[in-house]
Image 1 (cartoon, protein in one colour):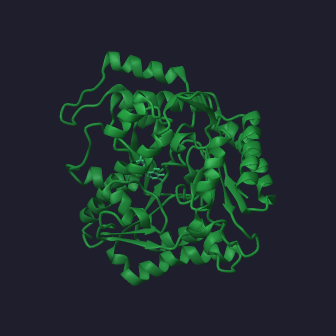
Image 2 (cartoon, rainbow, N blue to C red):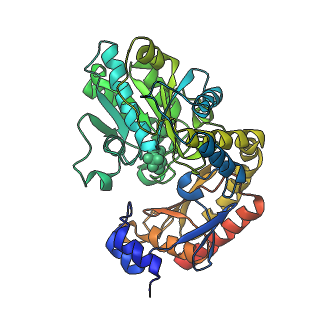
Image 3 (tube, rainbow, N blue to C red):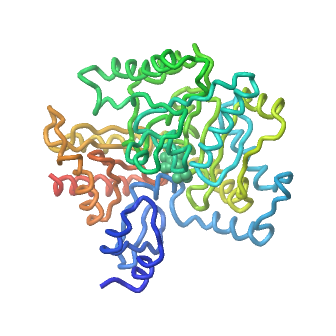
Length: 445
Ligand code: PLP
Protein backbone atom coordinates (compact mmCIF):
# COMPACT_ATOMS: atom_id res chain seq x y z
CA UNK A 1 0.00 0.00 0.00
CA UNK A 2 1.50 3.32 -1.00
CA UNK A 3 1.47 6.31 1.31
CA UNK A 4 -0.69 9.35 0.70
CA UNK A 5 2.35 11.32 -0.43
CA UNK A 6 3.36 8.61 -2.89
CA UNK A 7 -0.15 8.56 -4.31
CA UNK A 8 -0.15 12.33 -4.64
CA UNK A 9 3.22 12.10 -6.36
CA UNK A 10 1.95 9.48 -8.79
CA UNK A 11 -1.01 11.68 -9.65
CA UNK A 12 0.82 14.98 -10.12
CA UNK A 13 4.59 14.82 -10.29
CA UNK A 14 6.05 14.13 -13.74
CA UNK A 15 9.59 13.09 -12.84
CA UNK A 16 12.66 13.59 -15.04
CA UNK A 17 14.63 10.73 -16.60
CA UNK A 18 12.04 8.21 -15.37
CA UNK A 19 9.51 5.75 -16.68
CA UNK A 20 6.78 7.46 -14.67
CA UNK A 21 4.32 4.60 -15.13
CA UNK A 22 6.65 1.96 -13.65
CA UNK A 23 7.78 4.39 -10.97
CA UNK A 24 4.16 4.96 -9.91
CA UNK A 25 3.56 1.21 -9.69
CA UNK A 26 6.56 0.80 -7.38
CA UNK A 27 5.98 4.05 -5.54
CA UNK A 28 8.93 6.45 -5.44
CA UNK A 29 11.22 6.42 -2.42
CA UNK A 30 10.71 9.59 -0.39
CA UNK A 31 13.90 11.21 0.85
CA UNK A 32 13.38 13.15 4.05
CA UNK A 33 16.68 14.42 5.46
CA UNK A 34 20.46 14.32 5.14
CA UNK A 35 23.54 14.97 7.24
CA UNK A 36 27.24 14.75 6.37
CA UNK A 37 27.55 11.95 3.80
CA UNK A 38 24.30 10.20 4.74
CA UNK A 39 20.66 10.66 3.78
CA UNK A 40 17.47 9.06 5.09
CA UNK A 41 14.14 8.01 3.58
CA UNK A 42 10.63 8.19 5.01
CA UNK A 43 10.82 4.54 6.12
CA UNK A 44 13.78 5.44 8.35
CA UNK A 45 16.44 3.77 6.16
CA UNK A 46 19.91 5.34 6.20
CA UNK A 47 22.12 5.48 3.10
CA UNK A 48 25.76 6.33 2.52
CA UNK A 49 25.60 8.69 -0.44
CA UNK A 50 28.31 7.41 -2.76
CA UNK A 51 27.20 9.88 -5.46
CA UNK A 52 26.99 13.21 -3.56
CA UNK A 53 23.43 13.51 -4.86
CA UNK A 54 24.02 13.92 -8.58
CA UNK A 55 27.78 14.56 -8.22
CA UNK A 56 27.07 17.88 -6.60
CA UNK A 57 27.03 17.90 -2.79
CA UNK A 58 30.80 18.40 -2.57
CA UNK A 59 30.67 19.97 0.87
CA UNK A 60 28.34 17.32 2.34
CA UNK A 61 24.85 17.75 3.74
CA UNK A 62 23.68 19.89 6.64
CA UNK A 63 26.06 22.87 6.46
CA UNK A 64 24.21 25.47 8.49
CA UNK A 65 26.34 28.32 7.09
CA UNK A 66 24.80 27.79 3.65
CA UNK A 67 21.27 27.83 5.05
CA UNK A 68 22.01 31.01 7.01
CA UNK A 69 23.51 32.63 3.92
CA UNK A 70 20.34 31.88 1.93
CA UNK A 71 18.03 33.11 4.70
CA UNK A 72 19.99 36.33 5.24
CA UNK A 73 20.09 37.10 1.54
CA UNK A 74 16.39 36.38 1.12
CA UNK A 75 15.56 38.76 3.93
CA UNK A 76 17.80 41.49 2.56
CA UNK A 77 17.28 41.14 -1.18
CA UNK A 78 15.67 37.97 -2.54
CA UNK A 79 15.75 39.14 -6.14
CA UNK A 80 16.11 42.17 -8.30
CA UNK A 81 16.96 42.81 -11.89
CA UNK A 82 16.59 46.14 -13.66
CA UNK A 83 16.54 44.75 -17.17
CA UNK A 84 19.97 43.13 -16.73
CA UNK A 85 21.71 46.50 -16.20
CA UNK A 86 22.25 46.00 -12.45
CA UNK A 87 24.22 43.66 -10.26
CA UNK A 88 24.09 42.58 -6.61
CA UNK A 89 26.92 42.21 -4.11
CA UNK A 90 26.79 38.38 -4.06
CA UNK A 91 26.79 38.07 -7.87
CA UNK A 92 29.79 40.38 -8.23
CA UNK A 93 31.71 38.88 -5.31
CA UNK A 94 31.05 35.36 -6.61
CA UNK A 95 32.28 36.21 -10.12
CA UNK A 96 35.46 37.71 -8.65
CA UNK A 97 36.04 34.70 -6.38
CA UNK A 98 35.59 32.22 -9.23
CA UNK A 99 37.95 34.23 -11.42
CA UNK A 100 40.57 34.15 -8.65
CA UNK A 101 40.42 30.33 -8.56
CA UNK A 102 40.15 29.68 -12.31
CA UNK A 103 43.18 29.36 -14.60
CA UNK A 104 44.95 32.75 -14.94
CA UNK A 105 43.72 33.49 -18.45
CA UNK A 106 40.05 33.23 -17.41
CA UNK A 107 38.62 36.29 -15.69
CA UNK A 108 34.94 36.71 -16.54
CA UNK A 109 31.95 34.67 -15.41
CA UNK A 110 28.49 34.50 -17.03
CA UNK A 111 25.89 33.03 -14.66
CA UNK A 112 23.10 30.61 -15.50
CA UNK A 113 20.66 28.48 -13.54
CA UNK A 114 22.19 25.11 -14.42
CA UNK A 115 24.90 23.25 -16.29
CA UNK A 116 22.63 22.72 -19.28
CA UNK A 117 21.90 26.42 -19.57
CA UNK A 118 25.63 27.06 -19.29
CA UNK A 119 26.34 24.78 -22.24
CA UNK A 120 23.60 26.47 -24.24
CA UNK A 121 25.37 29.71 -23.35
CA UNK A 122 28.62 28.27 -24.70
CA UNK A 123 26.80 27.42 -27.90
CA UNK A 124 25.66 31.04 -28.28
CA UNK A 125 29.03 32.48 -27.28
CA UNK A 126 31.01 30.38 -29.74
CA UNK A 127 28.81 31.26 -32.70
CA UNK A 128 28.76 34.93 -31.73
CA UNK A 129 32.55 34.90 -31.36
CA UNK A 130 33.12 33.62 -34.88
CA UNK A 131 30.53 36.00 -36.34
CA UNK A 132 32.38 38.88 -34.74
CA UNK A 133 35.69 37.53 -36.04
CA UNK A 134 34.26 37.68 -39.55
CA UNK A 135 34.13 33.87 -39.85
CA UNK A 136 30.39 33.09 -39.71
CA UNK A 137 30.90 29.70 -41.35
CA UNK A 138 32.66 28.36 -38.26
CA UNK A 139 29.45 26.98 -36.77
CA UNK A 140 30.09 23.29 -36.20
CA UNK A 141 30.74 21.82 -32.77
CA UNK A 142 32.76 18.66 -32.31
CA UNK A 143 31.81 16.64 -29.25
CA UNK A 144 32.32 13.03 -28.22
CA UNK A 145 30.16 9.94 -28.26
CA UNK A 146 28.81 9.10 -24.82
CA UNK A 147 29.50 12.62 -23.51
CA UNK A 148 27.00 14.29 -21.18
CA UNK A 149 26.54 18.04 -21.42
CA UNK A 150 22.98 18.49 -20.16
CA UNK A 151 19.39 18.10 -21.15
CA UNK A 152 18.26 21.28 -22.92
CA UNK A 153 18.07 20.97 -26.69
CA UNK A 154 21.53 22.34 -27.49
CA UNK A 155 23.18 20.70 -24.46
CA UNK A 156 21.63 17.30 -25.18
CA UNK A 157 22.75 17.66 -28.79
CA UNK A 158 26.28 18.49 -27.67
CA UNK A 159 26.07 15.39 -25.50
CA UNK A 160 26.66 12.06 -27.14
CA UNK A 161 24.05 9.93 -25.41
CA UNK A 162 22.20 7.91 -28.02
CA UNK A 163 19.22 7.24 -25.78
CA UNK A 164 18.71 10.99 -25.39
CA UNK A 165 19.06 11.67 -29.10
CA UNK A 166 16.41 9.07 -29.91
CA UNK A 167 13.71 11.29 -28.42
CA UNK A 168 13.16 14.73 -29.95
CA UNK A 169 15.12 14.15 -33.13
CA UNK A 170 18.50 15.20 -31.80
CA UNK A 171 21.22 16.23 -32.28
CA UNK A 172 20.32 19.56 -33.85
CA UNK A 173 22.21 20.52 -36.96
CA UNK A 174 25.84 21.54 -36.65
CA UNK A 175 27.01 19.07 -34.00
CA UNK A 176 29.17 16.03 -34.76
CA UNK A 177 30.56 13.37 -32.45
CA UNK A 178 33.94 11.66 -32.42
CA UNK A 179 35.29 8.65 -30.51
CA UNK A 180 35.52 8.66 -26.74
CA UNK A 181 38.73 7.67 -24.91
CA UNK A 182 37.15 4.58 -23.31
CA UNK A 183 40.04 2.15 -23.19
CA UNK A 184 38.37 -0.64 -21.20
CA UNK A 185 35.37 -0.84 -23.53
CA UNK A 186 36.84 0.17 -26.88
CA UNK A 187 40.60 -0.25 -26.56
CA UNK A 188 40.67 -2.84 -29.34
CA UNK A 189 43.80 -4.66 -28.16
CA UNK A 190 45.89 -1.49 -28.02
CA UNK A 191 47.82 -0.44 -24.93
CA UNK A 192 46.17 2.45 -23.02
CA UNK A 193 48.91 4.77 -24.30
CA UNK A 194 48.42 3.78 -27.94
CA UNK A 195 44.66 3.96 -27.60
CA UNK A 196 44.81 7.43 -25.97
CA UNK A 197 46.66 8.78 -29.01
CA UNK A 198 44.29 7.03 -31.42
CA UNK A 199 41.16 8.38 -29.69
CA UNK A 200 42.61 11.90 -29.62
CA UNK A 201 43.51 11.72 -33.29
CA UNK A 202 39.86 11.21 -34.18
CA UNK A 203 39.58 14.94 -33.39
CA UNK A 204 42.19 15.83 -35.99
CA UNK A 205 40.62 13.45 -38.50
CA UNK A 206 37.23 15.15 -38.03
CA UNK A 207 38.73 18.63 -38.36
CA UNK A 208 40.39 17.63 -41.63
CA UNK A 209 37.23 15.93 -42.89
CA UNK A 210 34.93 18.91 -42.22
CA UNK A 211 37.45 21.68 -42.71
CA UNK A 212 38.88 23.97 -40.03
CA UNK A 213 37.03 26.92 -41.57
CA UNK A 214 33.68 25.35 -40.63
CA UNK A 215 34.43 24.33 -37.05
CA UNK A 216 33.61 26.60 -34.12
CA UNK A 217 34.61 24.55 -31.11
CA UNK A 218 35.50 21.24 -29.52
CA UNK A 219 33.68 20.45 -26.26
CA UNK A 220 34.70 17.79 -23.74
CA UNK A 221 34.50 16.77 -20.11
CA UNK A 222 37.95 16.31 -18.51
CA UNK A 223 36.79 12.80 -17.61
CA UNK A 224 33.36 11.64 -18.77
CA UNK A 225 31.12 11.49 -15.73
CA UNK A 226 27.69 10.19 -16.65
CA UNK A 227 29.30 8.19 -19.46
CA UNK A 228 30.86 5.99 -16.76
CA UNK A 229 33.77 7.86 -15.15
CA UNK A 230 35.85 7.41 -18.27
CA UNK A 231 39.30 8.68 -17.43
CA UNK A 232 41.36 9.16 -20.59
CA UNK A 233 44.70 7.35 -20.87
CA UNK A 234 47.66 9.59 -19.96
CA UNK A 235 48.47 10.21 -23.64
CA UNK A 236 45.03 11.56 -24.55
CA UNK A 237 45.00 15.15 -23.29
CA UNK A 238 48.57 15.95 -24.44
CA UNK A 239 47.64 14.79 -27.95
CA UNK A 240 44.39 16.80 -27.89
CA UNK A 241 46.41 19.83 -26.80
CA UNK A 242 48.78 19.35 -29.72
CA UNK A 243 45.84 19.23 -32.13
CA UNK A 244 44.06 22.24 -30.58
CA UNK A 245 47.25 24.29 -30.84
CA UNK A 246 47.45 23.52 -34.56
CA UNK A 247 43.93 24.57 -35.56
CA UNK A 248 41.98 27.76 -34.95
CA UNK A 249 39.01 26.34 -33.05
CA UNK A 250 37.74 27.13 -29.57
CA UNK A 251 37.97 24.64 -26.72
CA UNK A 252 35.11 24.28 -24.22
CA UNK A 253 35.93 22.29 -21.10
CA UNK A 254 32.80 21.08 -19.31
CA UNK A 255 33.76 21.14 -15.62
CA UNK A 256 30.21 20.69 -14.28
CA UNK A 257 31.26 17.53 -12.42
CA UNK A 258 35.00 18.03 -12.18
CA UNK A 259 34.95 21.64 -10.95
CA UNK A 260 35.25 22.69 -7.31
CA UNK A 261 37.54 20.01 -6.05
CA UNK A 262 36.48 16.67 -7.49
CA UNK A 263 39.97 15.94 -8.88
CA UNK A 264 41.86 17.43 -5.94
CA UNK A 265 42.32 20.84 -7.60
CA UNK A 266 39.75 23.59 -7.95
CA UNK A 267 39.36 22.64 -11.59
CA UNK A 268 40.41 19.63 -13.66
CA UNK A 269 41.93 22.13 -16.12
CA UNK A 270 44.65 22.41 -13.48
CA UNK A 271 44.86 18.64 -12.97
CA UNK A 272 45.30 17.95 -16.69
CA UNK A 273 47.12 21.20 -17.54
CA UNK A 274 44.47 22.34 -20.03
CA UNK A 275 43.87 25.86 -21.33
CA UNK A 276 40.20 26.11 -22.30
CA UNK A 277 38.61 29.13 -23.97
CA UNK A 278 35.33 28.54 -22.14
CA UNK A 279 34.62 26.46 -19.06
CA UNK A 280 31.21 25.17 -17.92
CA UNK A 281 30.47 25.10 -14.19
CA UNK A 282 27.49 24.12 -11.98
CA UNK A 283 26.91 21.40 -9.33
CA UNK A 284 29.83 21.79 -6.87
CA UNK A 285 29.67 25.56 -7.34
CA UNK A 286 26.91 25.63 -4.72
CA UNK A 287 27.35 22.01 -3.57
CA UNK A 288 23.85 21.53 -4.95
CA UNK A 289 22.22 23.54 -2.13
CA UNK A 290 20.69 25.91 -4.71
CA UNK A 291 20.58 25.76 -8.51
CA UNK A 292 23.32 27.80 -10.18
CA UNK A 293 25.69 27.34 -13.10
CA UNK A 294 27.88 29.45 -15.30
CA UNK A 295 30.48 29.85 -17.99
CA UNK A 296 33.99 31.02 -17.16
CA UNK A 297 35.19 33.03 -20.13
CA UNK A 298 38.82 33.40 -21.19
CA UNK A 299 40.36 36.80 -21.87
CA UNK A 300 40.63 35.84 -25.56
CA UNK A 301 36.89 35.24 -25.91
CA UNK A 302 35.91 38.11 -23.61
CA UNK A 303 38.01 40.51 -25.67
CA UNK A 304 35.89 39.75 -28.73
CA UNK A 305 32.45 39.31 -27.14
CA UNK A 306 32.72 42.25 -24.77
CA UNK A 307 35.17 44.72 -26.30
CA UNK A 308 33.94 44.32 -29.86
CA UNK A 309 30.55 42.67 -29.52
CA UNK A 310 28.07 45.25 -28.24
CA UNK A 311 24.88 43.68 -26.90
CA UNK A 312 25.02 39.96 -26.18
CA UNK A 313 21.41 38.91 -26.65
CA UNK A 314 21.35 36.06 -24.20
CA UNK A 315 20.63 35.57 -20.50
CA UNK A 316 18.21 34.20 -17.95
CA UNK A 317 15.84 35.59 -15.32
CA UNK A 318 17.97 33.80 -12.74
CA UNK A 319 21.43 34.69 -14.11
CA UNK A 320 23.42 35.74 -11.05
CA UNK A 321 20.46 35.17 -8.70
CA UNK A 322 21.50 36.85 -5.43
CA UNK A 323 20.43 34.02 -3.14
CA UNK A 324 22.09 31.36 -5.28
CA UNK A 325 25.20 33.52 -5.61
CA UNK A 326 25.41 34.11 -1.85
CA UNK A 327 25.07 30.38 -1.13
CA UNK A 328 27.67 29.52 -3.79
CA UNK A 329 30.08 32.11 -2.40
CA UNK A 330 29.65 30.75 1.11
CA UNK A 331 30.19 27.22 -0.20
CA UNK A 332 33.40 28.19 -2.01
CA UNK A 333 34.68 30.10 1.00
CA UNK A 334 34.17 27.04 3.20
CA UNK A 335 35.89 24.75 0.68
CA UNK A 336 38.75 27.24 0.65
CA UNK A 337 39.05 28.15 4.33
CA UNK A 338 38.64 24.61 5.64
CA UNK A 339 41.20 23.33 3.13
CA UNK A 340 38.74 20.67 1.91
CA UNK A 341 40.25 20.44 -1.58
CA UNK A 342 43.80 20.27 -0.22
CA UNK A 343 42.61 17.47 2.07
CA UNK A 344 41.13 15.65 -0.94
CA UNK A 345 44.45 15.86 -2.76
CA UNK A 346 46.71 14.96 0.15
CA UNK A 347 44.67 12.39 2.04
CA UNK A 348 41.14 11.39 1.16
CA UNK A 349 41.55 10.72 -2.56
CA UNK A 350 44.75 8.61 -2.18
CA UNK A 351 42.98 6.65 0.54
CA UNK A 352 39.76 6.21 -1.46
CA UNK A 353 41.66 5.16 -4.59
CA UNK A 354 43.87 2.71 -2.67
CA UNK A 355 40.89 1.02 -1.09
CA UNK A 356 38.86 1.12 -4.35
CA UNK A 357 41.60 -0.90 -6.06
CA UNK A 358 40.78 -3.79 -3.68
CA UNK A 359 37.59 -4.26 -5.71
CA UNK A 360 39.68 -5.10 -8.79
CA UNK A 361 40.35 -8.55 -7.28
CA UNK A 362 36.67 -9.45 -7.20
CA UNK A 363 35.73 -12.14 -9.75
CA UNK A 364 33.11 -9.95 -11.47
CA UNK A 365 35.27 -6.82 -11.72
CA UNK A 366 37.16 -6.34 -14.99
CA UNK A 367 38.75 -3.02 -14.06
CA UNK A 368 38.77 -0.62 -11.13
CA UNK A 369 39.77 2.94 -12.00
CA UNK A 370 39.55 6.34 -10.39
CA UNK A 371 40.84 9.85 -10.03
CA UNK A 372 40.45 12.24 -7.12
CA UNK A 373 37.04 11.57 -5.63
CA UNK A 374 35.49 9.66 -8.52
CA UNK A 375 35.87 5.98 -9.30
CA UNK A 376 34.38 3.20 -11.41
CA UNK A 377 34.36 -0.56 -11.70
CA UNK A 378 33.52 -2.57 -14.79
CA UNK A 379 31.25 -5.55 -14.13
CA UNK A 380 32.16 -8.60 -16.22
CA UNK A 381 31.31 -12.28 -16.43
CA UNK A 382 34.82 -13.06 -17.66
CA UNK A 383 37.83 -10.99 -16.67
CA UNK A 384 39.86 -12.04 -19.73
CA UNK A 385 37.30 -11.75 -22.52
CA UNK A 386 35.56 -8.80 -20.75
CA UNK A 387 32.22 -10.44 -21.49
CA UNK A 388 29.57 -8.31 -19.80
CA UNK A 389 27.87 -9.53 -16.64
CA UNK A 390 24.33 -9.57 -18.02
CA UNK A 391 22.95 -9.42 -21.56
CA UNK A 392 22.47 -5.84 -22.78
CA UNK A 393 24.60 -4.54 -19.92
CA UNK A 394 21.81 -4.91 -17.38
CA UNK A 395 24.22 -6.00 -14.60
CA UNK A 396 24.60 -2.46 -13.31
CA UNK A 397 20.91 -2.21 -12.43
CA UNK A 398 21.08 -5.45 -10.46
CA UNK A 399 24.17 -4.26 -8.62
CA UNK A 400 22.60 -0.84 -7.89
CA UNK A 401 19.58 -2.52 -6.25
CA UNK A 402 21.75 -4.72 -4.03
CA UNK A 403 23.79 -1.64 -3.07
CA UNK A 404 20.65 0.30 -2.10
CA UNK A 405 19.49 -2.63 0.03
CA UNK A 406 22.89 -2.51 1.72
CA UNK A 407 22.49 1.22 2.40
CA UNK A 408 24.93 2.43 -0.26
CA UNK A 409 24.32 4.54 -3.35
CA UNK A 410 26.41 3.56 -6.36
CA UNK A 411 25.29 4.58 -9.84
CA UNK A 412 25.10 2.18 -12.78
CA UNK A 413 26.08 3.24 -16.30
CA UNK A 414 25.31 0.04 -18.16
CA UNK A 415 27.70 -2.46 -16.59
CA UNK A 416 29.89 0.23 -15.08
CA UNK A 417 29.30 1.11 -11.42
CA UNK A 418 30.45 4.55 -10.36
CA UNK A 419 30.93 6.59 -7.22
CA UNK A 420 31.50 10.28 -6.59
CA UNK A 421 31.01 10.83 -2.85
CA UNK A 422 30.94 14.15 -1.01
CA UNK A 423 34.49 15.53 -0.79
CA UNK A 424 34.23 15.58 3.00
CA UNK A 425 33.90 11.81 3.32
CA UNK A 426 36.34 10.58 6.00
CA UNK A 427 38.41 7.39 6.19
CA UNK A 428 35.92 5.53 8.35
CA UNK A 429 33.14 6.35 5.90
CA UNK A 430 35.35 5.32 2.97
CA UNK A 431 35.94 1.99 4.77
CA UNK A 432 32.18 1.58 5.12
CA UNK A 433 31.69 2.38 1.42
CA UNK A 434 34.26 -0.22 0.36
CA UNK A 435 32.92 -2.92 2.70
CA UNK A 436 29.37 -2.33 1.45
CA UNK A 437 30.58 -2.37 -2.15
CA UNK A 438 32.30 -5.74 -1.56
CA UNK A 439 29.17 -7.27 -0.05
CA UNK A 440 27.16 -5.86 -2.96
CA UNK A 441 29.53 -7.43 -5.50
CA UNK A 442 29.30 -10.82 -3.75
CA UNK A 443 25.52 -10.61 -3.96
CA UNK A 444 25.59 -9.50 -7.61
CA UNK A 445 27.98 -12.28 -8.71
N1 PLP B 1 27.67 18.86 -17.99
C1 PLP B 1 28.02 17.77 -17.29
C2 PLP B 1 29.41 17.24 -17.45
C3 PLP B 1 27.12 17.15 -16.43
O1 PLP B 1 27.48 16.04 -15.76
C4 PLP B 1 25.83 17.71 -16.28
C5 PLP B 1 24.85 17.10 -15.37
O2 PLP B 1 25.01 15.98 -14.91
C6 PLP B 1 25.51 18.84 -17.04
C7 PLP B 1 26.44 19.40 -17.88
C8 PLP B 1 24.15 19.44 -16.96
O3 PLP B 1 23.97 20.11 -15.77
P1 PLP B 1 22.47 20.39 -15.22
O4 PLP B 1 21.87 19.08 -14.90
O5 PLP B 1 22.73 21.28 -14.03
O6 PLP B 1 21.75 21.11 -16.29
